[in-house]
Length: 319
Length: 319
Image (cartoon, rainbow over all chains, first blue to last red; front, side, top):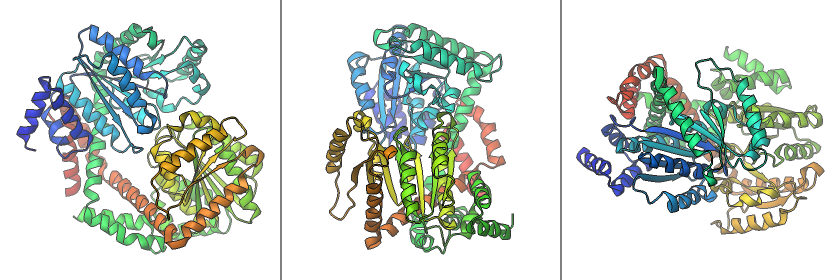
């Protein structure tokens, strides 16, 4: 694909051609060689949107929260893009179910774009691809990009390296596992939402969470995460949720905090791209063959896995 | 540390010095520069042990299963090492609780060595370190190395790249989420254990799981995973579990299947080491500074994240 073609398809997407947009996203999702050219061609627009991350355990109602939030943004004439990342494989059906609910509701609105990214077990490159897709949606003209991720393992930490505001959604039943609240999660949340808060246990969870947050070592000028209660299926608490997001946005925009946060995130992103380029470069045919040929010596105990690794690295550095 | 010192400490560990063994493991856990020398010095012994992986959701009783299995192996005069990997952070308490149970039971036995590896959110390098520790325990003279991992995200897939036999432990209550059984999990299990099978739902889960397994595309000569029911707290079904492990071991030892499986695993391991060396080499002070200096251009939209990444890769390749 020539640069000219990339410009054409990007311009078509900007002017509202959804098929062009879907095609661009498919390129970056499949790690197409043109990804770097596509992102480079829109580099001056990738920061245009405000990015909101929503994570939490399966069943916390993330899709419904996202839906309700989207409706509020739409009523303010914002264009909203939703990226639903489900790293738990297609078997869970989560991403698909969420999409179906959405499709009946906001999916037909011209100012909404929804994209699911499911993976088959492997988390490899998912964070890089999510960032690529968020960049494209920002550049194409969406005001808000919402990235929704099931909170398992690494994925919930990745979301914070993409989002300007990160929301952690939990349910009253999460109370049991409040001690299990991952250290990582505590560090990424800008806003806690106790969804389905009409169920028993919401108050107790809020108290416990408050207590935990108060133990956190924060400075006066730091952002202090709020805890909100919502019932997304009844649209309860959603306005407050949006107001909190805006309050956080205003907080970040003071004193360059947003720029600093985005700089931190962008550095992590560039690191990830560097490492993915190196991985691709090192595992060319020659060195993949070297690995295959020498592995029997490792199994025979004649060569350590480290010595073979250094052989391969040396061959790479001299190439 | 000189090679001589490494040999001394390794020899001390082999002759039964537990403090020496703990010290070696601490080196590799902290990614000490000597890790590669340590593994190289034992390269002819790293395959001596049979490696068993146990994974499954939190609460599946993995620790108790491991305990009971260990007792049976001990009664056969086997030396057993247990590596308990908890990637869900110290907050969950899982690894610690498991250890406490173990300590009262088998932890004081001289033929048992137990090591917990907990991580604080980050999964980075955990699989590499687990392999290093398993290699050391193999070389030191343990007959069986059991690697126990909480099944979240990537960790459950990593375990299969270390183990000769991989056991997936579930409970009757997992029935609901049988569709959520990850594609990856289905591919790694050599043996399914429905633990706590005195609770309602065990039969139904077994039927559902059987049905799912029968849909799998396998050839006649492939290993067909068995599904066992256990009540680990009452030592029920553990003998059958051990027999299945041995049946799988005998299966693997026919026709070089074990060698082929270990070759596949060893290749993945060498790949991981290569990539960790490259990561360390690329992020030297010079290029870390380059990243910090140029990131503002990315935020200003003058430089794309990809262009900056290629700048850094080029500087690395020319170094």
